Length: 216
Image (cartoon, rainbow, N blue to C red):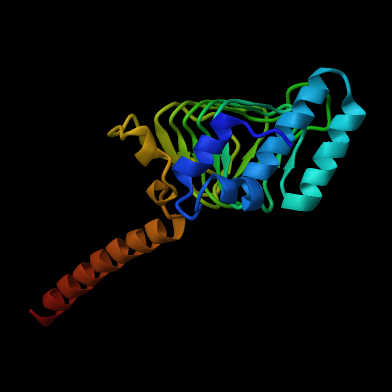
């Protein structure tokens, strides 16, 4: 199996659990899935679709990741914990993109033609997030874990929720290395808990005000 330097560098830079390059090549399922995709995609473009599908099938068996050979994926692509990752045939992914476990770049149509998402560059998609349909996700976007995105997202945005909605746009920019950290992605449940605490505090204040009025 060929090893692609850009993808290997992405693993070394973005996964602190990796010991060394040998560890990444032998045991990192995400890196293995990406390498096998690269091989299958090359065959797909050469018209050797049967051979491409065979590699795709084997990659799914070995890594739990299903990347269609027809998908177009840029440089320095990183998948952490490959299990459950699905990328459809007409998906387009830019450079320096990171996906975490359980991510789906899926279609919503049974018709031929472009039916999967287009992702720009320097994007992070959190665990379990689903991006559906022929939509465009701009550069420098972060999609929170568990989000379901079905509409276009402008560049420099943060998206969370079901359905996904933009909670930050053109905010403070951070360095690429920081932007690709998984811990920079908003926690949807934590955000909800924070909002609930604010609402409860407001209710307590209103209740206290009512009590004071009643006692006068």
